[in-house]
Length: 313
Image (cartoon, rainbow, N blue to C red; front, side, top):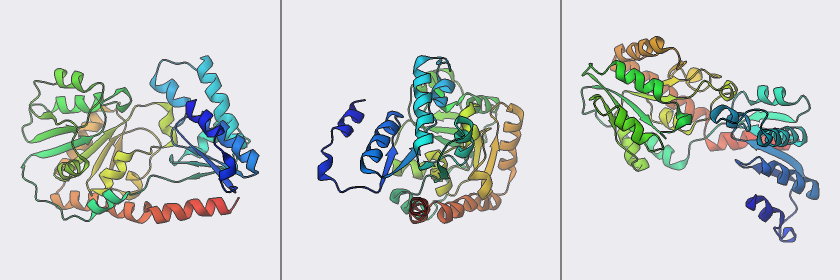
């Protein structure tokens, strides 16, 4: 609210008159502010959606659809979709959510996350020779409720007697201490904490398989837009996603597998399938993801797509 008030009080006379106003914020309130500014300047109004609210709020917390807060946010969301000349989202299937929210909406275009300069530099560093003879499964990210890591930890626990596989977890979060305590006796599972991005890329480069996990919440049926998937693909590693939502990226690049987290046996079978592949086959699988990313997610290409959408208004 403080941000919105500050934006509305901004001395607008010092600014050149815009032709387009883009409301891009994690707060839905910015849709209202963006619309007000667009009307003031008689400019096109563009709504950028990076998270689907209030659907995520309902899915990840105890808020219900009848909550006054949720109803207010739902009204703002619908208002933004109906007033926007263009709706831009990172989720590949956002159009289905917009249609479910209102039939009266602007054009919808999906523009995914790109390859930032640091990541681009790492994509071209020669691969280091692996030191461990174990099959290493790596996870990098947060340890919170929304990361839904329990199925992954259960899979690791089911293989606790296998001394030829190791699960490595990097990152921090509210549930990290809990996970460390409850898995303290598991010798093939290690928590390595949060490390610098450069060191993290070095560590992940030594893994044979990279994994991520999501809940079975309804927001995922509109697609994922996870930074970690971009970083995993950039490192040229096979990916196993515990994911039941709208498929994208990994299936398009054929660089891994997407398995619903509720399918415990299928999850373990898929891990074993990847594990039995030859080192060359896993290398080729990872490279397909890296090549797909370089072709489809460079910032010049994403910017060109965005500019075309703006010019077509």
